[in-house]
Image 1: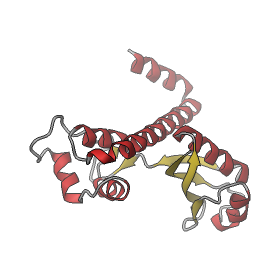
Image 2: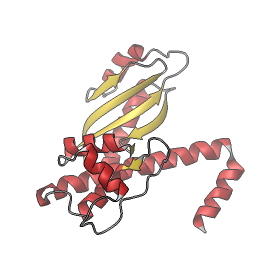
Image 3: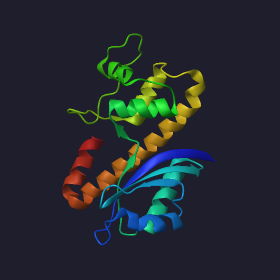
Image 4: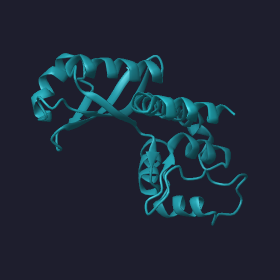
Length: 193
């Protein structure tokens, strides 16, 4: 069994938008390995540390537990996935190896010597660009930014963040397909070509 740390973000049912009202149900449904955020009415964030055979098993069991506790809740997204440079720095420093915000900025802007490949492109641009975590970790590992003893931990985090990224993409596609079925099919055909 491995340990996986991830977040689930849910929109609560309109019939009971108070996140605190769901705490007992979440605990009884098996979410005793999660810290539950209750700061925003209508939404809750669950920060899991879950034991499982693999990342998809961890995600599936956590989602099943939450949906058993909050049957009319809607999964908004799973994290960590899209992160800004500060968030990347904090997460990598916590889970793999110390990396400063300034170093992340230099990597992203190409102001670093002795790299094998260019830093991944931001997936969301604007005043606060966002990167997929799995792409950044793969880049850092390929460019020797982690100590060799961190290889196994880096691989595990790549696997988890890739599973999260895929789950989020499939959820977005399903929502788009439900709202715009013809457009979603045309876009899928375009992506395949």
